[in-house]
Image (cartoon, rainbow, N blue to C red; front, side):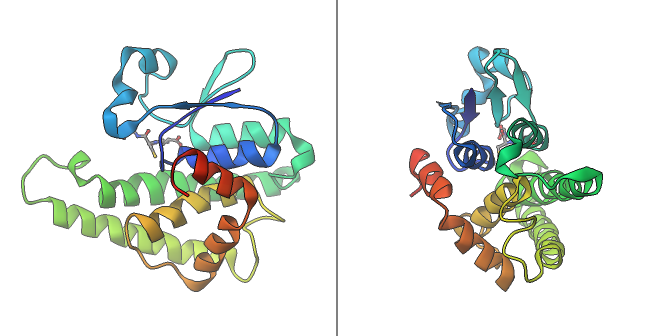
Length: 205
Ligand SMILES: N[C@@H](CCC(=O)N[C@@H](CS)C(=O)NCC(=O)O)C(=O)O
């Protein structure tokens, strides 16, 4: 399999899952800061111009974080990355969608890329503030979801990989304060060998 990623992007959550699974995979760097997502070569792979992209062993392409994460969990059931049963699966998907579609795409996107939301000069601060409020509200909800558990589900799950990249952005890129249990979750994630190797592979260790 091949993972198309950009250093420090949400694709690191998928890289972590691949390392937890432990099967060989190839990393293909697609540097968003250099506009690599808009090259004809990359658009031929993913016309949506986004990472993560997983190229599977049969060469087929899978995109969208929740879809890739569920595919990896379901094809590697021995790794227990997804709670079993309908209720466990939908609760995981519920959190994954909230983290990606709301906290990432509506919150962090405004906070870190305000220019995507308005072309009017002077709007940036207002957009960043809205993004910050969405992120803080999201973390308050995730704080409740995590509660006193070490991981969102079981001993580690696909939802924890998504939570990791949000927490990592909060601490290292956006300076958003994390509730205490999410702060501890981030430290717990940073201690996992697969997370350390993923950060190192992206030049972020
Ligand atoms: N809904 C997508 C979101 C993916 C996404 O927005 N990825 C960002 C990086 S974190 C991206 O590729 N952005 C393209 C750009 O900034 O031009 C998913 O779940 O995978």
